[in-house]
Length: 363
Image (cartoon, rainbow, N blue to C red; front, side, top):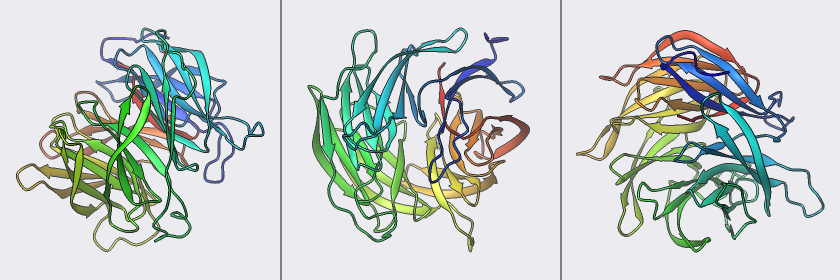
């Protein structure tokens, strides 16, 4: 199904397809959807089935290839992590599977692509991996696997070992930052001839549980959302030395908020003025304004996300819209973004999709 008009953008949505300890896996695979930038409505164009638990996606710079983390059956080696490569037709949103490759670890949870490698973070295995790409975008076997060691154990149920939760390049593409929830660290790597080389690290506050991170457009600041402490930490980044300096943190919740909550996703608007983070439990999106002079955040507003457990959300490339994906209420909601304040205005529009947990633009 093709776009109805020029105002529609192609959005990909990953889902849980199997029953998990923390998720009811009723998803069918990777959904291709059209988002109308005039009305805020979404419609499903296609769905690619056959990839187990494609819960995180990455789209290459040319918008020709999609990389998905996946689960695989334990074939006796004790490992269940994998990554798959797909070709995309942006005219109608159709996806075709190129190939999948195993990763010698457990619980792949995040993937990024550099154009010539796919980089994977494995939460349960506490490791990161690099897989080279062929000219057609398909995957070659793993060229590098780095096993993290140690944990802070501040939260014994969540920090009993290393828990690599994401791997993200700095804007220059020279360094790759890994948020490790179990170690309370952001670990910095270089990628040299397909090998992930440890470069340095920066500590988060004990028990914070860093989960995901996003860079400011200036390339000199990074924002880390902490799953366990429900906060966002600002880091100064030296792009020449590849070094992080922790500056300060701010809660994602209202003052005196009660009840269980964990944080999930974080994104920065294209102009770098506003930072957004999602709360699971409180089921909301927190809006912060970044002051470049003081290198600090100010919490501006918090908005109900329109569903249960906003596992992921995304801003449109122009920053005018925000879409939130809810794992437990199985829906994607849309919001207009106020360019002056960063505040969100719910459109009342939503698309029901089972166990949806990741949103990526393919435009």
